[in-house]
Image 1 (cartoon, rainbow over the protein chains, first blue to last red):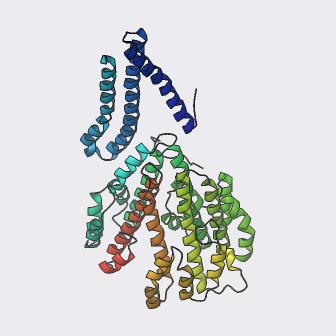
Image 2: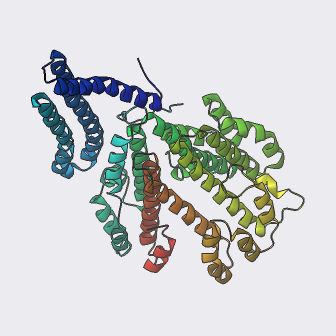
Image 3: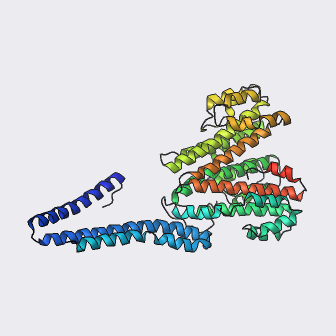
Length: 110
Length: 363
């Protein structure tokens, strides 16, 4: 499905995230209050960790694609800026690392 | 007629300006600084200028042209070649939207070339003389322009344009009977001017910010032309002719009413008074003293051209991922080439440095 409208894209995205995370939080809360371990908590945690990792990776990919395009343009005209461009190209990796750390924290949470 | 871009297309589709703007910024960083032009003006002779330019990106064009002789005319042609090559390179790396906008804005070079050919044919100049004055920076390439300049008469030029399906043929054909009858070249020039600006403003319609920016820039160009016409009309005796005939629609600030008002003024002071509240008041005021000293309206022409050039430079200071960066670079490059041509001519004829500095556009 191709969504062309920007507002529709945002609404779709936020609804999707809400639909994913609200049940996960509700389950975690329920499990905490009842003191028991529900298999659904594990599933929810896996979904949340996966979302954290994949969204951050996609965001970093988007950022790197834009930086890469501009970097390729700069490199064609000013090859001396190569080292600086590699640093810029690597910067969005931090977003993935943060996503990975959060996914790890979700996965190991009690 | 060949209208394909000679250089291989590397630009991205759609509206991604990341790649093209980064390249253009890189190219902009290689434009000459004021200090370089100052040194060039201090050169003893043409050989020294050529030697200095050989260390720059003008080298390949100079090498190709200097095979025909180390003359100012050949250096001049090399500078123009470099400009055309740069324009085509920028076009080739631009995205679809930028290509469309640039083709529209660079149509003024086609307009300039067609007017040059028509003027040349009207004055019975030779094909070589006409070709030397042209800059193939628009859609019409050098081969097309050479072919047009070889046509025997103005009518043959218009017919060739019509055969190629060039839009400029439409207004020229319509104005041809009047030209044939009166022999007045202004009829053809005015028709083609009006047609271009009408065609360009139609192509730049839309709410997109890049289109809006290009439209504003085109509007400034129209205003400048209209004001120049008004200033020229101050000393002209039109007789019964309606001055509004010379008005080109599509300007930003100079509308039909203001044009009619300005065209009826009798001296420059009145024109300035009327323009005071528009952005054009300042450039006119700045050169008013010069005008009183020299008595020539060319100082106003120069001031308005400088203003237009400054506006072109300013469009690059906005959105970093928009077409403004590319537009401003192309005008900067054209300005640099014009300045270099002035220096080359000046040094070759032994013009004093101060006079050359006066002639330079914006450094």
